[in-house]
Amino acid sequence: MQEPIKLGKRDRKIAVSPEMADLCLTCGMCASGCPASNLVTGWDPRKAIRYLALGLEQDVVDSKWPWVCTLCARCQYACPMGIQLIKTFRSCRTARERDLVPGPIHKGTIMNFERGNNLGIPRDDFLFLLADMGPEMEEDEEWPCPGFYVPVDKEGANIIVTVNSKEPFAEPDDMKFWWRIFYAAKEDWTVSSTNWEGVNWGLFSGDDENWKIQVERVLENARRLKVKTILYPE
Ligand code: SF4
Ligand code: SF4
Image (cartoon, rainbow, N blue to C red):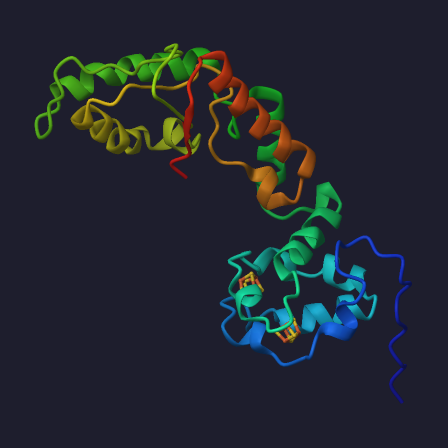
């Protein structure tokens, strides 16, 4: 005979409403439109919520579920009881030991904390690349932009732009799409020479502390350069 499931203690780590067990109707509306519900993982939002409501938190934290859930919010929009599914599932990411966070996002978060961008691109390499790409834009055969240069650390610009480190690292030409728009619009913009990363992996890895640090750094760049508008192209 199968052993009965032992329910976990009710001292919760996950930030869920204590009334959730009573509120959830098990109606399945959350699962009906969820792109991550499937037979491969064996999980769906209703099942995860039921586990959490029963105190089986560690089962959810140790599972693939918090990482295959895209945090898209369709479930929360559909839930008739107003259950905070997004906050709940992201809290499951936060509860995972950092060394067990899947993929590169924890490593990138630490790299960003230590070196100012997710891929550890040195400041000088970044500045050299930007300087080198100005003439490329000027001489482009299809869309030449005479006089173009990348305005780094320009005080009082209208917009400060963050950068996805993947672009200077592997696909620098992708930065040109925004630059052409700025050029055509005669926009007054700038990019910071430091802490310019625009992809906050602390958000996705559940690392609240580093999430906050990165946001503060971007804000600090805007304050230092007296720019009022921050653009996150990501
Ligand atoms: S939609 Fe809301 S009430 Fe219905 S099963 Fe999902 S979490 Fe529970
Ligand atoms: S947030 Fe997660 S659980 Fe909710 S619908 Fe999106 S993928 Fe599914």
